[in-house]
Image 1: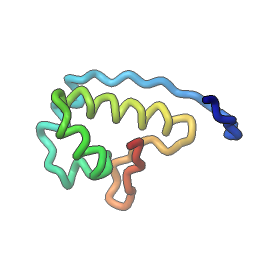
Image 2: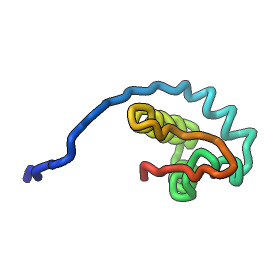
Image 3: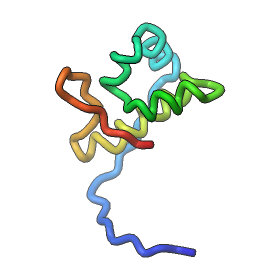
Image 4: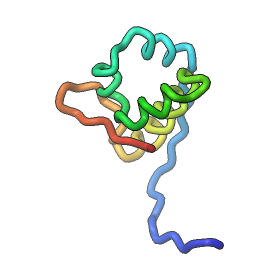
Length: 86
């Protein structure tokens, strides 16, 4: 069944993130640091996956693709809370 969508798409983004780059980031950061970029739910989901680095890369790329056009891409600042995609 199709549902009517009333949202207007104003911009669309596409982002590709090398898994190796995200793997290095995830491997050297503790959970508190990862919480600057990912929500707790996203971290739990990625960590429970069979290939966590791949899931982190997909999650980060999705956030970037959605956030860049809306100017809400992940920012690792002490006061910023990560927006979630899960």
